[in-house]
Length: 218
Image (cartoon, rainbow, N blue to C red; front, side, top):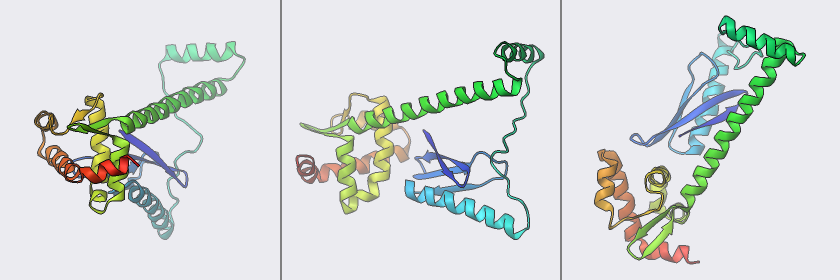
């Protein structure tokens, strides 16, 4: 899953590298290459802002105009037949081709962005309610996230948990039992990195089950 950040008119697209355990991204709306990374969302956002500022400062030092994301002009190429049909459609609505394209493309863009945001929100809500069981005890992903954030050793595992919970929710929508399904889950994850991450999370949560239970019952 990827997300976007905005800063000074520039757009950064962020993705997750589970193996390297980092968030990484690049500015997507210019041809110059600007990249950034961080271990947390806050680190990645700050790195994105810093990279844009460094880019602008570098251009200023060289006396060059920095590339700007959007000029308001789009080079649009299509087939002669589609060009004809676009002209007819614009004419039927009493608009120029430019005005018609601007309206239609803007509406399509808003629709896609809205669908993406709704899908992302829905995914986050589903993940927060996903349950991990340890025998007879069962906890929501949201409970585990809060527990890890509140404990010193857990904070080091929080980033991994957020990534693993989303992955698990997609493949095991009804939840899993960490003890009963441990072998199956390790086989599912396959790679050593996934298996090691899952093992460390389960061991920590299992070892602190009393604290976890007490926190979630408050």
